[in-house]
Image 1 (tube, rainbow, N blue to C red):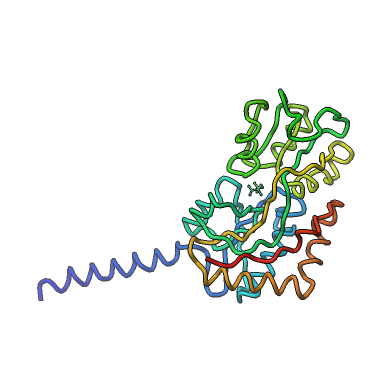
Image 2 (cartoon, protein in one colour):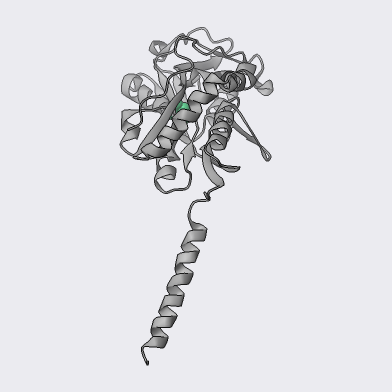
Length: 272
Ligand code: GLU
């Protein structure tokens, strides 16, 4: 009898601890899902006040609805934090210009791809000496930490360029506008979105010579093939019912960017 009370207290304390854990675990329930996007990439993932716009946002909304979610909490997933945010359950899915790579697949899994882009360069409209990645000798080049773009430059051009890395592309674009750097590198579709912003009208140009293939996948927790399969089914439906094309035209299309029709829309990879 004497032991009953302490055990009762312990059981009650454990029940409280369990329920607290349940409350603080990812903001995902049967109807609500936490989704990672970019907050500063016009045409792809952009937050303005409480409004989220862009192609990644539209694909995320479509997929979430197909999966039965009625409520989405969008969270910012900067390039360098994407794997960690999936691994730590802060988000269930990421739609954030997130290229499928073997390196990333060691930590996370991907559904898709749902879009294919290519790495390019953004320079001042009157620049004539930067015409491709092989003309960056001695130039100041900006990219984002944790991106495939920065990695590719490091691997292939690091000896020739001065690489400046920020955590978001909007900071690179501001530096280009102020003349602090000579070029920004990332995917062509992202660069086109920035170049089309009213405040930068006529200031920049995308060089137009891509030097990589970037296949945008939906980042999910490593090994969740069930979720991957459901997302791929939703993505295929989005293409076949015309919503994919409409979303693209309404978002990315506004910048005048023309996606490579030879590789878009892509067929999702098999889930593994
Ligand atoms: N698609 C590339 C990547 O996943 C560059 C864009 C980005 O950083 O989101 O790294």
